[in-house]
Length: 515
Image 1 (cartoon, rainbow, N blue to C red):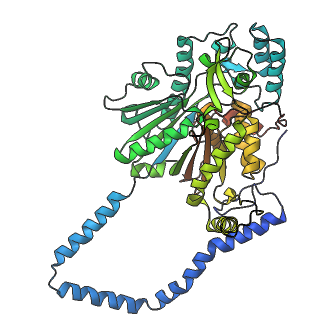
Image 2 (tube, rainbow, N blue to C red; image 1 turned 180 degrees about the vertical axis):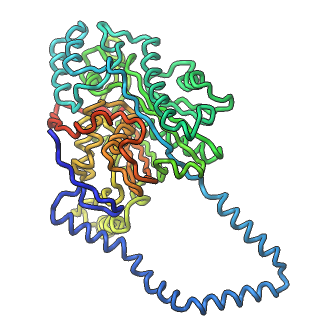
Image 3 (cartoon, helix red, strand yellow; image 1 turned 45 degrees about the horizontal axis):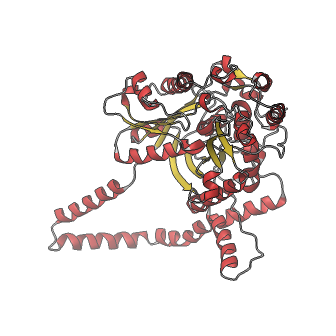
């Protein structure tokens, strides 16, 4: 069943797409346009005066320049000072970071696993009690995950095979597939030997040699390549990798950075009876993404996006946040991811902390003004009954990519950020089609937007990632051109016409997992 979508206009101004037809929404947009354009109106009169008197200003400037030349100060010294000031200005500016392209792997069809197959395997596994088999059946039915996700053979086999060899096979198959697709898409821009920085994030599988070393060996990268392997940082590690790459690209001119976001399920598939540790089995699935970043100005015209902001916030100093998603062993020694009852509250606080930092960087003047008025009323005039104002981020972004951690996560953020079905569609469809692929899920969501042909030049996309610790990270991307659905490989293209699909409502039995 298809959900009807509101069409987007080609304008970069906010439209009613994702707003609905409520009269208050129209009034809010009118207010936004008036306030946001006030600054331009205020500059019209000085600009008219400037144009009217430009011949007087030009005469004065010329007269002052002649006086300066006829003074005792040598002309070449003046020119030198101007040159030094210009060089200092351009040297002090941070280098722009471009996203040349990215690729999300579509695992081998032989790994496709329906929920029925999962339950068959669960029933055959003698480690689960009958009550917990039924518990998992309910989780599968209401998780928001569809029937065409992917699981490795090491998990589906009875009994499972949680060996290092199987875990390495799983990780390498995803990594190589994603990188091969990325290099095929960017072969006219970069060769493997041109890559100067490699960053891999895989939270629960950190073998040695590292996964970075595996990539260097496979693609025969140059000897002075800079490599980083990030582990244990949860589902938001992909955005941490982007932040690390951004800082490295500021100090290494004319460089390419390859980021690989992947996860391995083999050694962390839980086969015990602790219910707080069973939820991840119903959500996590195979997936991986490779991203190519550049700081070369010559790559701007062929890149898809420019990195605008990265905002990272960490609430790990709070004990509840720190233990809300915790890898541990149960009483029988079986390893898994335990989720606390405080997880939703922790996630809400983490989001609040992050958007408090991000808001002033991206929100239009109209929203900042309303936020300031409410803040003054509450803090200065002690008007406690006034509700805190939640800014409308739909006025700052055209697209939202929220980590597909689970159906309850998406429901909660849809409510907190007052987003529409249209806004949430990339996240919900990614969860349905590919499951929770950890840090790579944000890239499947961006690929969904591209496959739908929604990315237009000038659009801003907000990626929001959550991770254990507890962390909330954001990146903002600016589209440098229109992105057409038929550009290179895309994991959605051969089936994009099937989406969106209807996903049943979540049950209170589901608690989310965010990594």
